[in-house]
Length: 358
Image (cartoon, rainbow, N blue to C red):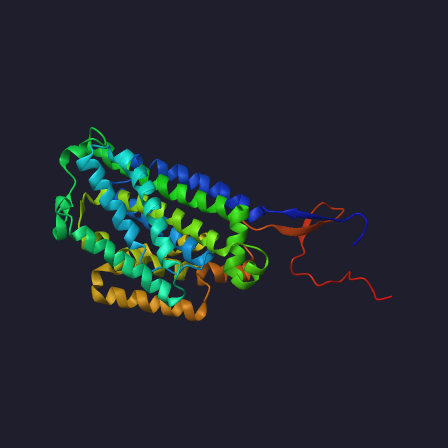
């Protein structure tokens, strides 16, 4: 290296700066949707935002902490039932009941985590599904909330959101947009923190992480509680929009876990961009093929198989391998700055300046 060159550690790249500007513009356009989109479009966008939030949370759980759960519907349904209980029996506004449902989800996830963290691998996945079934059977026994047939939100509760129907729809839309932005922001902040570095190390090599002094149990426990809280809040918002809940709908493994896993797998597990891309692709397929009935699910399975065969790390994983793009600027990179002040990425350069043996 010449005297005019020096090393520097950078996080942001031109691609990440462009992505940030585009994200702000898209967010402004989406926030203005009540003035340019129809009611059906807003409902579809709201559903897309909620699935994107669920996928990002499951990706944080499985893609970084290595906790492959097939029972996250437990927290979706729990949040939905918390919403109805808080609004019907305690008179809370739905806008206040949603964050309270998130706090309740965090409290419930603590004993659940202590119990199922005794399991490993496939046994852990099966254990999460068993917990979700316990939640479903328990909800079916609560006659005050409709038992096995479920119940609906009272009209007075729905009208308490806003005076007019248009304003109610706009409010629930903004809440869905807000919660996906909150989830993505929290995931970014977490992964850029020291705890996030520990999670990335656990994802790459759990044994090596433990040898470096990382408390793996505590890191996984923290992630599980955070995802439980946010998943419960998302579940509460889901059933605020649906206006009706039943045990089978609230704790559906197909709707709230299988589709979410599909989204993360095709988009790219272990990346922030993956769930975003996977959600968009999933909704494009659903809106195009939903009229085909059972054939639609077969096509989804075929798409997942093809992507896993040709791009095992998902669509974004494949793109990142080919282009080295990092839109969320999570990782730091060492670059060399020359006399021209133009940074040059040296991550993949050969050790051309190694000292010669004496």
